[in-house]
Length: 166
Length: 127
Image 1: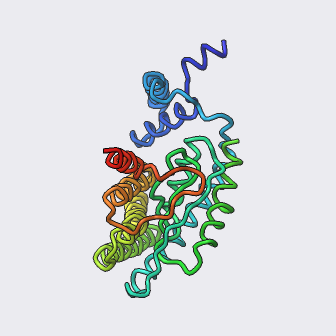
Image 2 (image 1 turned 180 degrees about the horizontal axis):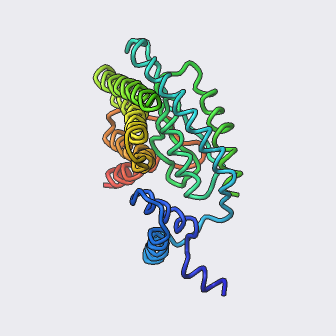
Image 3 (image 1 turned 180 degrees about the vertical axis):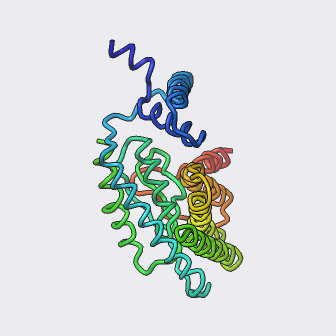
């Protein structure tokens, strides 16, 4: 029974997300739209499951919510900081740096979320992954102390992500 | 009636803030002279600028007519796709050596964008 369910719903959260996206796209909440969204949410993950065979194990939605709130807050702060740097720091005084973040995360989905978070937050862009995926290359716009930026990323984001994808 | 007026003023403030952030992003894009630092301004300031413009649009639709949730979808897709395009631009810069060379990774051989180059170098050395 559970195997049949797993075959039909390879990514249950994706099914719910697709149904939700469909309802928002319609801009109205009705039972018919919800049912049609669910049908789409079942057909799309089922027909594309060949390209995403490994479901991330132990994904905790309850821990994801505070993480998203923290990231949203950081995005607002980051925008103000970057805007301030753009407007006030002259090019000659700008101190861009490469930093290398050693990764404890092993799941591809978790690393993707971490890289996306880094790009969206304080003056950092994730540029590349090492060829076997053990470290992440991050470019910092302006920093006095590259090591503290690295520790900040590990403490603030990676620790929470290891709890989410455990 | 008063709620409508508050909504319109809030919409106006959101549009002003959003336009300001977009302007700062453009200034950054023009001002910085290194290809990697130039990537920072539009990726971050752009998301916030467009986010505020969309928030203004939502407030407008809620205060004047039926509410609309389409904007949350635009924001969600924007926040998911912006890091990926930034990542690809950064990878192109790395691959074409348009920027300062990054330090080598501590545990693995090299960065994945530079991996093909290593093989090319090894092939050239063998010849």
